[in-house]
Length: 356
Image 1 (cartoon, rainbow, N blue to C red):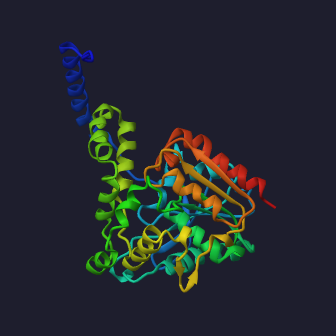
Image 2: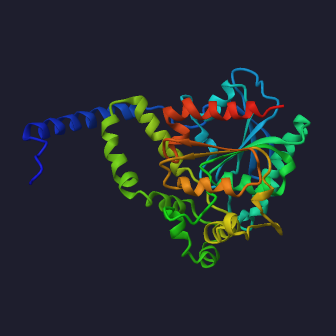
């Protein structure tokens, strides 16, 4: 039986008129749009090693937490997705609850960084920031929040330096890179990464972005731009859209050697599960991650499927392991209204229960 047609000539004409009106209004709205930037919370640089900088966020009130919380983001995007704008800021939510929040900015690698290795990112840069905070606060260990690839780095660091991490939080972090529903992993397992890096040197940001966008081509190449018509007459909504677009396409190149090592040891070798992750001559064994661990994953994540993240439970040595599932996707866990209500409070409550 043929399904009934749910539109008429009149409804199509009305939809066309609405689209025309919004396109016309968009010409005026675009003239009114302010300069778009991201990073809503005041911050100050407190430590630097080359292009890598450590920033402290300044809230409207002094922090009450005695132990600083360091956020380590992925290399492939700018870290301010966690502080995108005033009403979409995990950082602001943490500050309002009294946390003392820092973030590591990896900077923009250039040709001089071609031979940086994972040891540089994990032990030198992440480790240098941790040691700086340990000295400043006169504490043996700090709290660490690793996000996406930054979560994988944080797991490596915590396994190699367990005495320096008091509490570890991982968010949308891949652990088992060989789950069946991990499309990105299926692509990279067949990549001749040696030829790729030897040819390109550093991996261009445009290449990385293209790979991520083609994971959801209809949604990310067509649907969202068609949907843009609906908000052309709404200045605030348009600014929000443009802010997200700017963040997506403001991506650093990837240092060649570190990229080579990460693809081989994590995506191809599945090193957390199978072993074989080597950081500066030291093997990474998640059994040495013996501090309290909170693992947060997104239920509709197409980049880090839940199964890829939940594998952490069976690998860490900690006797204090907790999981938090979030109804949303890889980006929604930072910027959605649900995230603003749920994620900062969950992190703060978990840390507060384990504070001395």
